[in-house]
Image 1 (cartoon, rainbow, N blue to C red):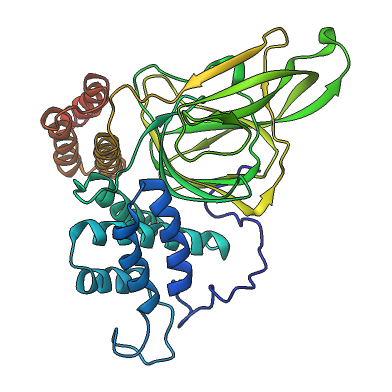
Image 2 (tube, rainbow, N blue to C red):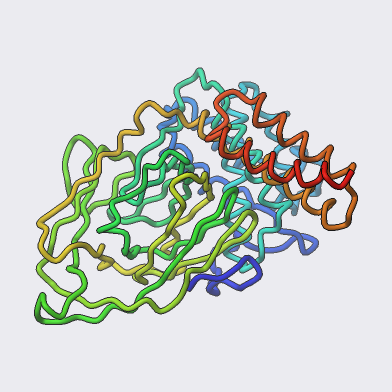
Length: 398
């Protein structure tokens, strides 16, 4: 179900020893970080000769002499891991790959323990992820963006597959304020794996649906469609991290849908989850930027049969993954700019509520300067107009 960041996610029985607390802190063991790093290697197509020394370094950390802890210490805090990476890895590419793994692993630990990721946690995780995405890699690794059938651009961060299915998949999602969204006819869909999102910027709305099988098209609102993925080599129901397209095909099975919840509004620093095989849709305004960190986690629920719903009378639909030249670094920078815009706007609005007009004016002027000075600010005129409206109201009070 969809919940805010204060709600608890599904409980998991941990059996691999990776999730023990040290001083009640959310620390990361070398084995847990190594697992996530292997997924980062897949997501970034990191060459084996670059990845192997990093993985060896991770597994060697936490022992006596490596860091300022005793020999029994095996789990380190994210800041300790980052400091260790700076000292233990000589190439900046290697350090950045380790840092994105540290950020994802920390988010994974938080979710697996049903702990809330605070605004401070998310800011730290995002800084690690953004730093890696925007770093100009020279040794082979690269992040890649792909257009989803639901209208957003997705950048894989960590991809772990098992028997052709998603085991754990972490991605960075962004809806641009460019009017491009998914085909509304296929908006209602389900996921094989349990899904959770953490909002980085903007606003999205989620709706959930009950789905009832019916025998005739006259009684149906939708038909069920089966999903497959292509990577340039073959098309199948085996999941592929790096895809060229996805295709849904009408199964001929009719259903009737009824909205059961929503729209639930999700904003920066909130989190929500969708259990496996639950039908939902996500709506983001055409002129709004919205971004999330996202995970599919089969350990918290998985169902092989998780169809997409579509028109009763269509045969199939294919979505090309081509991002049309938009780079991951540009997307990450857009999100960072929007996070700054939102935070400054909120500061100005808080000052206005307290009738602190001069402080409010200064805050809104900073937002205005952001809109005017940042190259390629997304939908700059629209966001600038919002600031000018607030600024005009404040100046009338001075």
